[in-house]
Image (cartoon, rainbow, N blue to C red; front, side, top):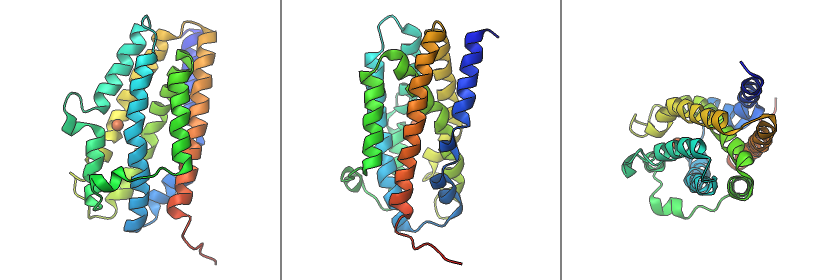
Amino acid sequence: MNAEDQFLEALIAELADHPVNTNPFFCAFKDARLTRTELRVWLHQYHYFCKHFVKALEGLLYRTPVDALDMRVELAKTLHSELGSGCSEQAHIRLLERFAAALDLTDEDLARTTPIPKVAHYLSELHRLFVDSDYLTALGSELAVEVTAAAEFRYFYPGLKKYGDFSERDLAFFELHMEIEDCHSAWLVEAVRKTAQDRRDLEQVAAGARTTADAWQRFWDGMYQEVFGARVPTTH
Ligand SMILES: [Fe+2]
Protein backbone atom coordinates (compact mmCIF):
# COMPACT_ATOMS: atom_id res chain seq x y z
CA MET A 1 0.00 0.00 0.00
CA ASN A 2 1.45 3.40 -0.94
CA ALA A 3 1.63 6.41 1.38
CA GLU A 4 -1.47 8.05 -0.15
CA ASP A 5 -3.58 4.90 0.35
CA GLN A 6 -2.35 4.67 3.94
CA PHE A 7 -3.31 8.28 4.57
CA LEU A 8 -6.79 7.71 3.15
CA GLU A 9 -7.28 4.52 5.13
CA ALA A 10 -6.30 6.33 8.34
CA LEU A 11 -8.74 9.16 7.52
CA ILE A 12 -11.61 6.70 6.99
CA ALA A 13 -10.79 4.98 10.29
CA GLU A 14 -10.74 8.37 12.03
CA LEU A 15 -14.18 9.21 10.60
CA ALA A 16 -15.55 5.79 11.57
CA ASP A 17 -14.29 6.37 15.14
CA HIS A 18 -15.56 9.95 15.39
CA PRO A 19 -17.69 10.48 18.52
CA VAL A 20 -20.61 11.65 16.38
CA ASN A 21 -21.21 7.99 15.47
CA THR A 22 -22.14 7.14 19.07
CA ASN A 23 -23.56 10.52 20.14
CA PRO A 24 -26.09 10.80 23.01
CA PHE A 25 -29.05 11.38 20.66
CA PHE A 26 -28.47 8.09 18.82
CA CYS A 27 -28.12 6.15 22.09
CA ALA A 28 -31.22 7.71 23.62
CA PHE A 29 -33.21 7.16 20.42
CA LYS A 30 -32.38 3.46 20.42
CA ASP A 31 -32.88 2.81 24.13
CA ALA A 32 -35.58 5.21 25.34
CA ARG A 33 -39.27 5.07 24.48
CA LEU A 34 -40.03 8.24 22.63
CA THR A 35 -43.53 9.66 22.72
CA ARG A 36 -45.30 10.23 19.42
CA THR A 37 -44.76 13.95 19.92
CA GLU A 38 -41.01 13.41 20.39
CA LEU A 39 -40.85 11.20 17.28
CA ARG A 40 -42.65 13.88 15.28
CA VAL A 41 -40.29 16.62 16.52
CA TRP A 42 -37.33 14.49 15.44
CA LEU A 43 -38.85 13.60 12.09
CA HIS A 44 -39.70 17.19 11.16
CA GLN A 45 -36.03 18.15 11.59
CA TYR A 46 -34.55 14.99 10.11
CA HIS A 47 -36.82 15.13 7.05
CA TYR A 48 -35.92 18.78 6.51
CA PHE A 49 -32.25 17.87 6.61
CA CYS A 50 -32.54 14.84 4.28
CA LYS A 51 -34.56 16.80 1.75
CA HIS A 52 -32.20 19.76 1.56
CA PHE A 53 -29.05 17.65 1.74
CA VAL A 54 -29.75 16.17 -1.70
CA LYS A 55 -30.04 19.67 -3.15
CA ALA A 56 -26.64 20.53 -1.65
CA LEU A 57 -25.26 17.39 -3.29
CA GLU A 58 -26.59 18.60 -6.66
CA GLY A 59 -24.72 21.86 -6.03
CA LEU A 60 -21.51 19.95 -5.29
CA LEU A 61 -21.83 17.97 -8.52
CA TYR A 62 -22.33 21.16 -10.50
CA ARG A 63 -19.29 22.82 -8.90
CA THR A 64 -16.96 19.85 -9.48
CA PRO A 65 -14.37 20.80 -12.14
CA VAL A 66 -15.13 19.49 -15.62
CA ASP A 67 -11.88 17.50 -15.69
CA ALA A 68 -12.51 15.78 -12.35
CA LEU A 69 -14.41 13.11 -14.27
CA ASP A 70 -13.96 10.29 -11.74
CA MET A 71 -15.25 12.51 -8.94
CA ARG A 72 -18.25 13.53 -11.06
CA VAL A 73 -19.03 9.89 -11.87
CA GLU A 74 -18.97 8.79 -8.21
CA LEU A 75 -21.06 11.80 -7.12
CA ALA A 76 -23.57 11.13 -9.90
CA LYS A 77 -23.92 7.51 -8.69
CA THR A 78 -24.60 8.75 -5.16
CA LEU A 79 -27.11 11.35 -6.36
CA HIS A 80 -28.85 8.83 -8.65
CA SER A 81 -29.21 6.49 -5.68
CA GLU A 82 -30.60 9.26 -3.43
CA LEU A 83 -33.15 10.13 -6.10
CA GLY A 84 -34.46 6.58 -6.32
CA SER A 85 -32.27 5.29 -9.19
CA GLY A 86 -34.60 6.72 -11.80
CA CYS A 87 -37.88 6.14 -9.96
CA SER A 88 -39.18 9.15 -8.05
CA GLU A 89 -41.41 6.98 -5.85
CA GLN A 90 -38.23 5.25 -4.65
CA ALA A 91 -36.40 8.54 -3.97
CA HIS A 92 -35.14 8.28 -0.42
CA ILE A 93 -37.09 11.33 0.65
CA ARG A 94 -40.32 9.67 -0.55
CA LEU A 95 -39.48 6.57 1.52
CA LEU A 96 -38.94 8.78 4.55
CA GLU A 97 -42.32 10.40 3.90
CA ARG A 98 -43.93 6.94 4.15
CA PHE A 99 -42.67 6.80 7.68
CA ALA A 100 -43.92 10.35 8.27
CA ALA A 101 -47.39 9.20 7.19
CA ALA A 102 -47.20 6.44 9.82
CA LEU A 103 -46.72 9.25 12.37
CA ASP A 104 -49.73 11.07 10.86
CA LEU A 105 -47.55 13.78 9.36
CA THR A 106 -48.75 14.92 5.94
CA ASP A 107 -46.67 16.55 3.20
CA GLU A 108 -48.27 19.86 4.20
CA ASP A 109 -47.19 19.36 7.83
CA LEU A 110 -43.64 18.62 6.69
CA ALA A 111 -43.59 21.62 4.35
CA ARG A 112 -44.25 23.83 7.38
CA THR A 113 -41.10 22.67 9.23
CA THR A 114 -38.90 25.45 10.52
CA PRO A 115 -35.38 24.10 11.03
CA ILE A 116 -33.89 24.55 14.47
CA PRO A 117 -30.70 26.68 14.45
CA LYS A 118 -28.33 23.66 14.64
CA VAL A 119 -30.01 22.02 11.63
CA ALA A 120 -30.04 25.25 9.63
CA HIS A 121 -26.42 25.86 10.56
CA TYR A 122 -25.30 22.40 9.46
CA LEU A 123 -27.02 22.81 6.09
CA SER A 124 -25.42 26.21 5.56
CA GLU A 125 -22.05 24.75 6.55
CA LEU A 126 -22.52 21.97 3.96
CA HIS A 127 -23.47 24.56 1.37
CA ARG A 128 -20.31 26.51 2.17
CA LEU A 129 -18.15 23.38 1.97
CA PHE A 130 -19.84 21.87 -1.10
CA VAL A 131 -20.39 24.96 -3.19
CA ASP A 132 -18.16 27.79 -1.97
CA SER A 133 -14.97 25.84 -1.12
CA ASP A 134 -12.41 24.27 -3.42
CA TYR A 135 -13.37 20.88 -4.84
CA LEU A 136 -10.96 18.86 -2.65
CA THR A 137 -12.37 20.34 0.57
CA ALA A 138 -15.85 19.64 -0.84
CA LEU A 139 -14.87 16.08 -1.69
CA GLY A 140 -13.61 15.52 1.86
CA SER A 141 -16.81 16.99 3.25
CA GLU A 142 -19.00 14.61 1.24
CA LEU A 143 -16.68 11.70 2.13
CA ALA A 144 -17.33 12.45 5.82
CA VAL A 145 -21.09 12.69 5.23
CA GLU A 146 -21.18 9.25 3.62
CA VAL A 147 -18.72 7.46 5.94
CA THR A 148 -20.50 8.71 9.07
CA ALA A 149 -24.04 8.22 7.67
CA ALA A 150 -23.99 4.47 8.28
CA ALA A 151 -23.99 4.95 12.06
CA GLU A 152 -27.37 6.61 12.54
CA PHE A 153 -29.22 3.69 10.95
CA ARG A 154 -27.70 1.21 13.38
CA TYR A 155 -29.58 3.15 16.08
CA PHE A 156 -32.66 4.38 14.21
CA TYR A 157 -33.75 1.07 12.66
CA PRO A 158 -33.71 -1.03 15.87
CA GLY A 159 -34.88 2.04 17.80
CA LEU A 160 -38.04 2.22 15.67
CA LYS A 161 -38.59 -1.53 15.40
CA LYS A 162 -38.87 -1.82 19.19
CA TYR A 163 -42.28 -0.09 19.18
CA GLY A 164 -43.73 -2.97 17.18
CA ASP A 165 -46.31 -0.74 15.54
CA PHE A 166 -44.55 0.29 12.36
CA SER A 167 -44.78 -2.01 9.34
CA GLU A 168 -41.87 -3.02 7.14
CA ARG A 169 -43.27 -0.66 4.52
CA ASP A 170 -43.26 2.21 7.04
CA LEU A 171 -39.62 1.50 7.91
CA ALA A 172 -38.35 0.96 4.34
CA PHE A 173 -36.20 4.12 4.48
CA PHE A 174 -34.36 2.90 7.55
CA GLU A 175 -33.94 -0.69 6.44
CA LEU A 176 -32.61 0.38 3.03
CA HIS A 177 -30.02 2.65 4.63
CA MET A 178 -28.63 -0.16 6.78
CA GLU A 179 -27.02 -1.40 3.55
CA ILE A 180 -26.89 1.43 1.09
CA GLU A 181 -24.62 3.71 3.09
CA ASP A 182 -21.81 1.20 2.59
CA CYS A 183 -22.20 1.65 -1.19
CA HIS A 184 -22.24 5.44 -0.92
CA SER A 185 -19.15 5.53 1.26
CA ALA A 186 -17.31 3.07 -1.05
CA TRP A 187 -18.11 5.34 -4.02
CA LEU A 188 -16.78 8.39 -2.18
CA VAL A 189 -13.62 6.58 -1.14
CA GLU A 190 -13.14 5.70 -4.82
CA ALA A 191 -13.70 9.34 -5.77
CA VAL A 192 -10.99 10.46 -3.32
CA ARG A 193 -8.58 7.74 -4.47
CA LYS A 194 -8.94 8.76 -8.11
CA THR A 195 -9.08 12.54 -7.57
CA ALA A 196 -6.55 13.44 -4.85
CA GLN A 197 -3.17 13.26 -6.55
CA ASP A 198 -0.74 13.69 -3.67
CA ARG A 199 -0.34 14.30 0.05
CA ARG A 200 -1.24 17.99 -0.29
CA ASP A 201 -4.52 17.14 -1.99
CA LEU A 202 -5.29 14.56 0.69
CA GLU A 203 -4.62 17.10 3.46
CA GLN A 204 -7.29 19.31 1.90
CA VAL A 205 -9.70 16.37 1.67
CA ALA A 206 -9.02 15.59 5.35
CA ALA A 207 -9.64 19.20 6.42
CA GLY A 208 -13.06 19.20 4.73
CA ALA A 209 -13.88 15.81 6.25
CA ARG A 210 -12.96 16.82 9.82
CA THR A 211 -14.89 20.10 9.67
CA THR A 212 -17.96 18.20 8.47
CA ALA A 213 -17.84 15.42 11.08
CA ASP A 214 -17.52 18.04 13.86
CA ALA A 215 -20.45 20.03 12.42
CA TRP A 216 -22.52 16.81 12.18
CA GLN A 217 -21.95 16.27 15.89
CA ARG A 218 -23.31 19.77 16.66
CA PHE A 219 -26.37 18.89 14.52
CA TRP A 220 -27.15 15.92 16.78
CA ASP A 221 -26.41 17.88 19.98
CA GLY A 222 -29.04 20.36 18.80
CA MET A 223 -31.43 17.51 18.00
CA TYR A 224 -30.97 16.07 21.49
CA GLN A 225 -31.95 19.38 23.06
CA GLU A 226 -34.93 19.77 20.74
CA VAL A 227 -36.32 16.26 21.23
CA PHE A 228 -35.36 15.42 24.81
CA GLY A 229 -34.75 18.88 26.30
CA ALA A 230 -38.29 19.12 27.68
CA ARG A 231 -37.98 15.84 29.63
CA VAL A 232 -37.71 16.25 33.37
CA PRO A 233 -34.42 14.68 34.47
CA THR A 234 -35.01 11.76 36.81
CA THR A 235 -33.32 12.11 40.19
CA HIS A 236 -32.23 9.15 42.24
FE1 LIG B 1 -30.36 8.20 1.37
